[in-house]
Image 1: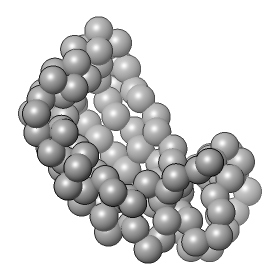
Image 2: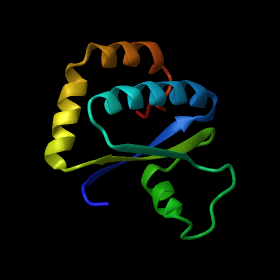
Image 3: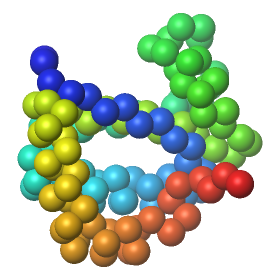
Image 4: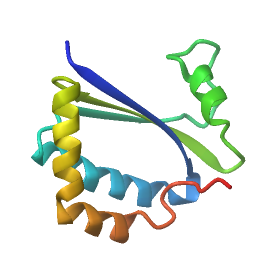
Length: 113
């Protein structure tokens, strides 16, 4: 599967997981409309993963989830870097993306300070 893959890894408060899923579905629809090829997303299991299980130990070290948070891991597939840049530019200009952000994003992603 040649192309360009973006990898996202972020903490989400468990209590806000439903809001995040709504945001993610809406974002995915907009991005597919603009040409994204594939999108896969995974939520960290409740139990601590065994060592070297699908790289989750690396992800936990990267994100350092706090109490009450789960880790979301996402992969987005594009044909090339140029294709990724074009799709992201089109999505940024799409007014629907602003609506999605205001409607679904509040509290969906854990804020760190």
